[in-house]
Length: 564
Image (cartoon, rainbow, N blue to C red; front, side):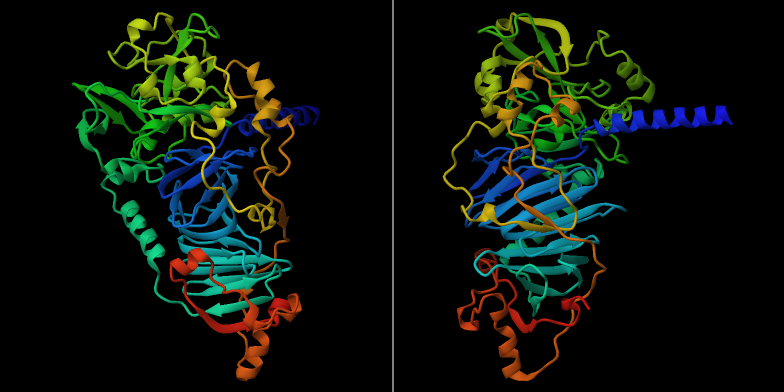
């Protein structure tokens, strides 16, 4: 009996250690800013500063976006695409392997969910309600700050809306506008054909669904549809199809046209300038094929694990000096990627096996002996190594303008590192283009939102982490050290009001009581005596531009909306 108890205790300790290691792993996916038409601004988690939002920027928990009026943007998160219309203020309250939680303070979102695994959560949090997507499909959410309303549309799929002590089901072909915070004041809308904004989103969906590149990569790979342009697919024995970039300079090399930024929790992250550059920068591997570079994707049947940059950094003889340099090269098809951040053994295997042609034994051996001197496929390939001054590197300067000739890169050694010993600066976090012309309206960030799933606290500011990062030689903080830093006071994630989970029921249909009674129902005296004539239109400015369906005239307090 004593032996059984000891064995049970040992099993529990092993499980606890494995669980603790798993908790150290970063998310395996991010959000990609895939498209911007017009002006968009970006603020990293924990920061008050805003910079210009640029395509291919990886976004994660706490990051905020402002899409200016008459502008559009698209976010991609694996099998989820979120399109934002003009005048939209949003933030990522939570983004990990299971949860996608977006705060929408005002504006318009068109959401396409292509796949929804068991236990996966997709939730839009607005000042009126929490909008939870339950099935793959197409959805739209509008938040109008002028009349304190949220309009929801289900083109395809099934959704639920949550408020205080009540929840409703919104089915395919249904649309409602909700006022206030309790889901007790609402209208049914007559569904019309999609407007121009939604037709644009549908066109983006077709591009996503019908991409020829989908045959060669995992369907969960972010940005694969952009591989269709400026490149061709060719078959290489033992490596399956590879993609060769076209219309690039004769001396072009991977990880040259773009810049480096500091993105928590991964650390130094590559942001490529090319519209097609996201997938080849964060997944797969590179090889030299004849006189061209070829990108080699990983297995098509595995969900690829995101990496900040699939490169090896070359050691420097004089880190921290005025002439200190940073150099790197792309990893080859069978090279093992070594993250600069802490990972569990299983994560280490998955980030390599899902992106390269490697076996478990080789990856496990490398995990157990990371100090071993390894020879990498592209380290000696002419033109593969890119170098620049460390000062320009930390300031997120465009690499192509700052590239040093290898002959001038006298500090290069054969040692390959997971990360350069370069300490990030504030500009490394916000980006090289600060102080955009437009920011969200001052009133918008002050509105609390309703959530059905409690998000994590907002991340700490860079200023709060800066001292610890300066002592960490260019590597992200260990999870325990990062957790010890207090988060910013509502800098990235505004106040969130979490409501209790309630059984969702169909939205009650209001009985026909005649024109006079309907007119009485349309009054909003219960929320401050506002008369129908004084009420602001339900559709937001972005929805007006997109020709949102008009009200169907059915509004009021049904029996279920009182909690019955």
